[in-house]
Picture 1: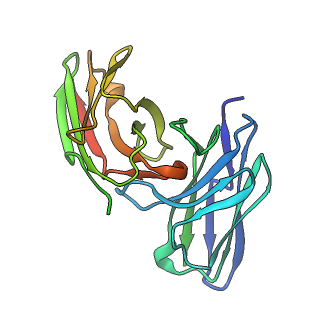
Picture 2: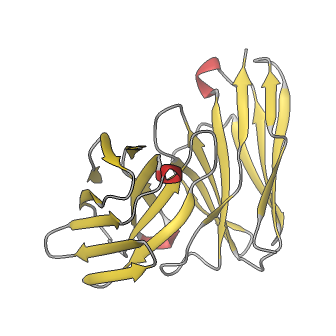
Length: 114
Length: 109
C-alpha cells in the first residue's frame, strides 16, 4: 500500500464551526506533514510530525491544531476559521524527516470557509 | 531567507524536449526535489538530487549544481499528458520542503 488517504474530499464550514481533517498512511512512514495550497500557488508547509511528535510548526495560527494519535494517522482540527483559510489542505508522509526521503502526498481536502 | 525561482509558464510541442530551470537560495540545503502536479490533484514525485550531476529516469532527467544553486528538469518525447505544473522544491533540515511557484507546462499537438 503506497497511498496516503485523506477525508473528507470536500468540506464547507462556517466561521463558528469545529471540524477535523483526517489523513492516514500504512507505509510505515514515521514522518507526516500538513501543507496548505491556495489556488495557483505552491504548497506551503504548516506542520511536521516525526515519530508522532510535533517537530515543526511554521508559525501557524492556533485555530489550526494538529494531532498525531498514532504512527498511521494525522488529524488537523479546525476551529473559528476565516474565509481566507479556504484552500486545499494536503497531507504527506515520508520514511522519516532526516534525509532526502520522498514525500508522498494525499489527494487533499478542499476546504471552503463561509 | 528562502528564495526559489522558476519560470511561470512554458509551452512545447508533442514529441519535443523541454527544460525547466530552477534557481534557489536557501539555508540548510539538503537536496532538490521535482514534483508534478496536475490541476486539482496532489503533487507526485518525479526526482530528487542531493549530489551534483544528472539523474535520469525514463523520459525525465534532473540536474543539480549546488555551487551555482541551480537545477533543471528535462522532459523528453513530450506527451499531451505531460501538461501540468512542475514544482521545484528545496529540502531543508527536518524534512522542511520549500516549493517554488511552479512552472505550468502546456504541451500542444
